Amino acid sequence: MIREISRRLFVPHPSYALYMIDFNNSSVFKLGPWDLSQVAPEIVPMMVTGEELLSAFKGARDYVVFSNKRLIAVNVQGMTGKKRDYTSLPYSKVQSFSVETAGTFDLDAELDLWFSGLGKVRLEFKGKVDVRALSQLIASYVL
Image (cartoon, helix red, strand yellow):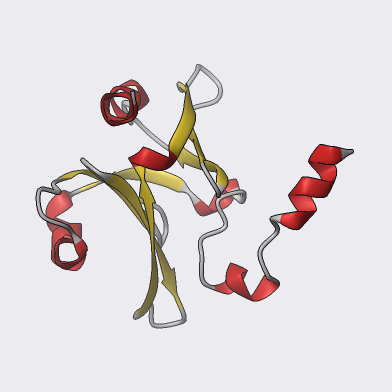
C-alpha cells in the first residue's frame, strides 16, 4: 500500500511527458551502435571540463550518449526534428544497475539503471551490442 501511494506522489505532471523521454516505454529505445563523430558536434558544446564521449547508440530518432560522467538521452521532437530535449543522467545518481544479455530467441539486450530521484531507466539494445562492456563502463564510474 505504501509503495503504491509513493508511486502516485512522484508521477510527473502529464505535460512533462511531452518533453522528457518516456523511459518506461521500451519501444522508444531499441538502440543500435552509432558513430561518435555523428553526435559529437551536437553534444560537445554541452560537456563540462574533463568530460569525454565514450559511446553512442541510436534508435529511430532518439539517441543516448555515454560519457565518462553521465548518460545523455536525446529526445528528438516535432515533425522536423529540430526541437530536442536533452536529459542528463549523472552516474553519481545511479543507485544500482542490471544487464540482461541477448539470447538465442530474444536478440535484444537490456540495461536497467536506477537513478536517485528518477527511478528506473531501461535501455534496450538491438543487434550486436556488448552490454557487458557497458556494464563495466558504468561500474567503473558508479562503484
